[in-house]
Length: 100
Image (cartoon, rainbow, N blue to C red; front, side, top):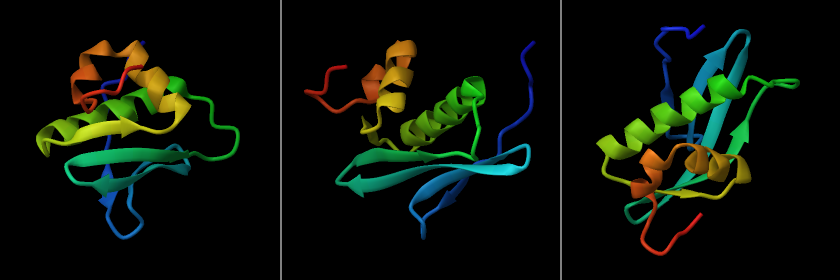
């Protein structure tokens, strides 16, 4: 059963990470910018976090932000590479020359 809740994402520019909350914990994806690219470098989750569907939704929202800001996305983390492989519609966000 799919939930239709709206995920609230905060772009914490000071900490250079996108943040959202899940139940009683904070989930964040750290990033860095270089030219018109955003490098997704680290995912921080509460201990024992295993909700891959929520994490996938969070990454989907981050892709929407990248599209809105006209950024290319460079996945550094294997978990984010797996997200791109499972969601080929976002491969257009990869910079030229990056193949997964």
